[in-house]
Image (cartoon, rainbow, N blue to C red; front, side, top):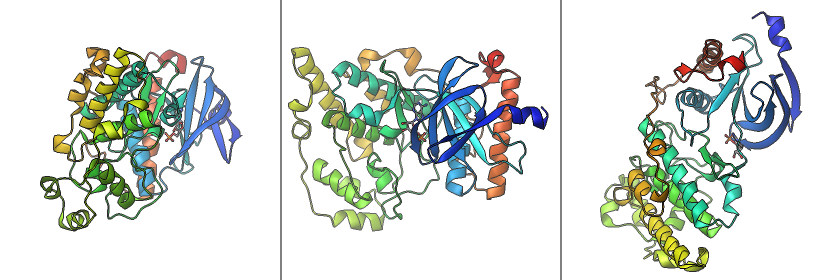
Length: 384
Ligand code: AMP
């Protein structure tokens, strides 16, 4: 496509402090959220004749953290295809050459709200358990592709008013540094598991801890383990759940173990005390049964020692959740991630710039050829 024709395809509009330069097919942009990577707008897509969400990544190659996250997100979003993970509808950059390349725009399905907004609401057991079921289906699908999230939180989970739910991001790269002894910077860490806080090895059920924290918050309407930093947060964990056993302490590295052993000892509280009946809707015998099931699930998810914590599969079979079990959703074919080095990549700014630019061009190419996620795209004709 020649440069002039390409230029005419775009227009600019100010949203908040930022300028969005988008394809003309996207109209009526309105800011709906912002995260670590930038601003998200809703828009109307004239080609697809539906509302979409557009996220602007400004100079995503500017440093290692941004670049790795943007690249990983782009690659993974292209591969993953599951109803509980946000789907990518389009990717574009208004810049015309690698030299000029600055910004990437990701166009996604538009949802109504993030889970932070839902946490304020009084949900019945039906909605509560359905939201949890969908989180678990999405997580299971990520795990099947070898993606362990480790950073699930309400701001990265979005829902629609019909109670459908999607996970927005892919969490921490395997090589992402984290842990009690790391320098703190402002990110939400309340939902991170003890093995992440304490810098231990982890397995798939690291994500179950986060789901437990989210369920607890939906019931209590308060963050379960708030903390100014990991140290403060660890205190909140042991005050409520009790000091972990010697068997657990032995799994810690020496410096962390010394720290953990020197905290005051707590016996913790029973789950009946932590989540009393008054927190749950208990108007009928059925609701009372559901409340006790929800509490039982919480007690199996919020276990400090991961080796004693419930797995994703077990959680999907739990009586509170398994009422929704649908093999097509739970056992969907796992996505194939072709870039095996995805998490290990270390590059200079210039290399990242080129890698990300190539991913954008690759998307455009695939769209032209009508291929999306390895399959012919149903959107191909409309996108041309
Ligand atoms: P992010 O930059 O991905 O962390 O998103 C920041 C916020 O924007 C989220 O917490 C949501 O409130 C909102 N958001 C992002 N993507 C979408 C979407 N596809 N639909 C609705 N809201 C979204």
